Image: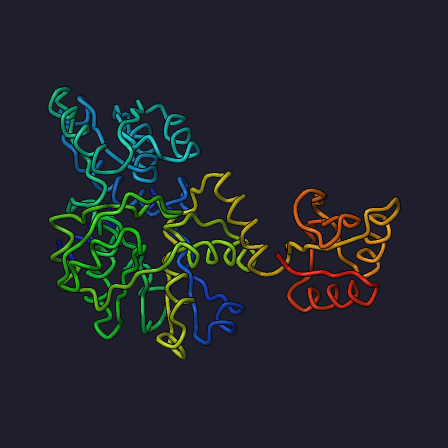
Length: 399
């Protein structure tokens, strides 16, 4: 795979996928101290960059392969891409997905008419089952990342970035199996050699980072908010390309990715899945490395399960001190709770939850401990509410 292969893929895909915007976020640029541009791949029809590689591979099947059908293993985004474009081209599609795949991705794959088989708990288990089915049913395997035509399709993201952002200093790309960064790095280095390419993995799934650094990878059984890049082993074809064209590989924490999802929704009004937010999480986690530079982050996808998104938003509200839990001791007499609520209301804070603790806690048998979840404007209001409660004669602490 080289720049010519990627350019050929770009022509092949013209008019069949969305040429996604790559726009500067002026708010995030100011907050992070750099010129930050976001490549919005979540605006593809299936909300992921995976359409590029899947379609590029599908368009190059011969008549016999199209008639027999294709099979793919995927945590969701590759599955949706193959299912959607397979249906559009009249190619039968079978998809194998891990049982842990968010329900939104499963249903969004089925809606395009693909046969969906749930097998195993992680990608490698689904992969082994997929290979067996491909042989049994004589189906063409469309690998999600370890395929040159798939990588070339993903590389069109890099072509567009170089065309859309003049002289980027750094392009930051999420990494699972390595298909996206292999294509993007190949394109960027060919057209803008001075631009650094940085890959991002989760701390819990960092095999590509370890291999890149010459270390022995471990194996994680832990869950991650970024299941789209929770790949135990990068591709045999992708890893040499990563070593050749990528300048650095870093990891980010679960909390950093959750914060990035929250920030993208609040500031950019755009939905990112965990993998899609990983690149921004890397910049937020290491601001000094990107300070003063022109930085492009690839928002690779937006297919996040609604329950996960709900939890991320709630946790984000806690981290930004807009939901705060207090413990207040009040007299165990009629009207005491109403008096405390009146004080809190006068301080412009809204009570979201309230719970009495009579048997646990309390310095006196004549007192009761009340645990409250309050809606706040931020950290400054916490101090105001605590001071107001103390002034009214209550003992109050943040839980």
